[in-house]
Amino acid sequence: MPKFSDRLQAKEDEYAEMPFSRLLGLVAAPPKWTPGALPGVETVMNTTEFLVHHEDIRRAAIEWIPRRLSKAETATVWAQTKVALLPYAAKAKGPVTIEAPGFGTRTAGKKGSGEATTITGAPLELLLYLMGRVEHALVDVR
Image (tube, rainbow, N blue to C red; front, side, top):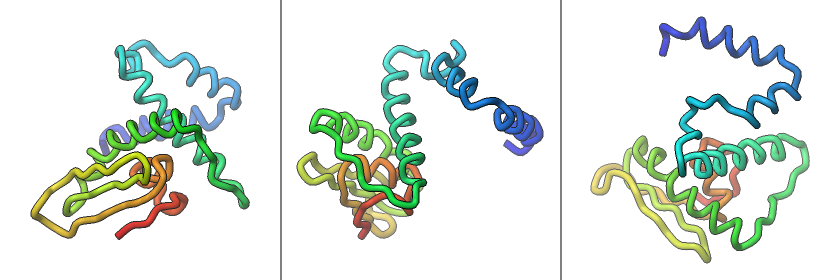
């Protein structure tokens, strides 16, 4: 919100000056009022947040290779990807379908309006795409 932009900039500057170890401590022990403190929300929120940001760091390297997750880990990521589809599809002009070979298909969004989009890839790649990492996600978009 524009009226809080000065405060936001001051807070960002404060965090930018902190030693990395202190920043990690803030992540390890977030404030009690955070939405992640709600029962059931922490696991869902943190799984997606930490995974996406971990991949941000990995994929910032000049040479990186896709990470192989176990079947169980990939199933967890697929569950998170289906949740991430909802806000993504809400902003799209038409329905959005995600396809993860071996895991399934899910469609969300405005049916009957706009052009349909299908995004195909591994669950981790789909999650990254839906979370805005379009340049680094290994997906097929049609």
